Image (cartoon, rainbow, N blue to C red):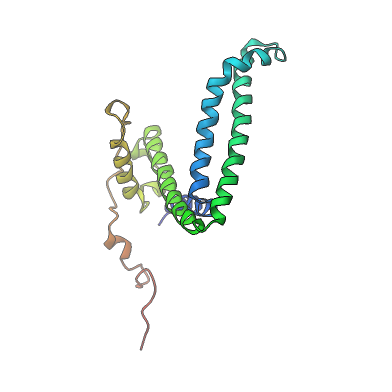
Length: 193
């Protein structure tokens, strides 16, 4: 196990715990808040542009500042609504279900982050030039298989080139359960009678 494996596990655990604490409803409403703020900024830009021109003399900055102003205000409002609704759901009888589904959502989000990192890393650096800890990571092959599945969901014209991991170690159940150099199997030791 390399530091890359620990980083992948860390991303999955942190994402799952954050989503568990917040709950599925608040997580989904949070994503909706970002999308809604972006849509509101695009839609409201022509209406706010004239007001911002009164304070900004440089024309190059009028549109970015107008967009950012609308986006920020709408995002704050929608996040407050998401927090309120999330709190109501968490305190309801469905709070446990909400948190449990949030945990599942967090694991899926963490896996998506790891898969995106694999795809971007493969596009930025050829696999044969990857650092040794990346090449030897036990979770490299499962991540590649997840990236394959994710890329298949995209339309053919938008699929990025996906590079398989360099040949070498294959992650199998046998490899994960193989005895370590001290002669002990990974996991709990059996009870002695």
